[in-house]
Length: 282
Image (tube, rainbow, N blue to C red):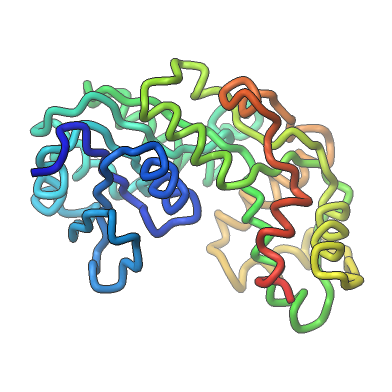
């Protein structure tokens, strides 16, 4: 029988969820991970793995049995089944990985922000004990540059001087774990960023330093950027990305001290993130 304070991590193979698993284990907490295919989970032997599908409440009820805390990442279409299942469980705390974009006043109709808002609205109306974690710009978004860096030593950017404060996924997980362990109140839901405001060009330079290579930046016009991004995302998501970057070019992507206040230390610098992920860019 698992400890009654078992934490279920939904999204345990994700870039943040995997760190949530590791940090809970390091804190001595029993962890259960839900995945669609347990045979491909590739998680620590200390983790109990269960099969669950965010769109199927019955599989989630089984995953939630005996669980008291949940780390949740859910797309807009997947939260209703979770809420149905969670109402039948005896949960003390749900920590939702959301987005700082929901707090940006200019992102009223932004497709990415609206997707996260829809999940938050559903959770707010559920009656469940939940709190959001809201990172604004994840440092691992720059992994989208990896292919062109590896093959051409170039990154193609719209508004390369746009300034953002990317946060290491390990720090996002640390804030989530603090919330799961009851060491955080409502302040955990404040906008979460890295401590450094860096232009996109500077981020490219720091990745270049991490792999000891010069990386060229090619600036894209808005029309070129739309053509470029549409190879990877739907048009509404492309519009959302371009809106965020254009706002960042005009000071609309702030740096906050939420991570430092929550963790009692500065957020991990982007240069360290680049070193941690250097093999992806080589």
